[in-house]
Image (tube, helix red, strand yellow):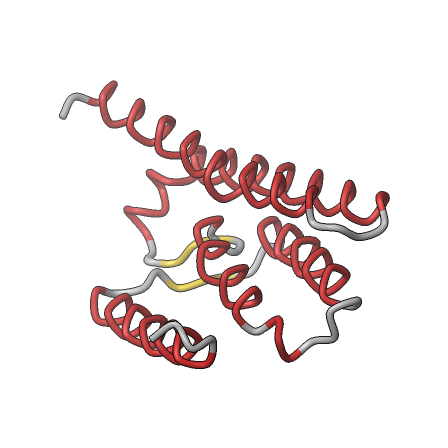
Length: 148
């Protein structure tokens, strides 16, 4: 790839990540029934946190690839693991409290996006282990719901 194609790829990937892991959870959170100010604040924060995190990532990505295998801040793609696990575990939380818990997690995640914490990049082995754990949790959830 040319240098321009590489930079374009980083930018378009971040735009897709923003929509999938920032805007989409915000839309879901906004439409989840709870007090209006909390759902509005949580939805705005997760989008803004994702924008700031991805903007910083785009600026620092080339340097990070040369120097380290760590990310600064929680990667936005972790939303794809955290919020579905929270959803699947909602039967352990009283129904009237769950929307507050969900929005609180959205706010916490948005803060973790921008904190200057080091998060190690997973190896292929780590990804496979996480996928296996996720599959086991999903199968357990489906069994509890008497779907399988």
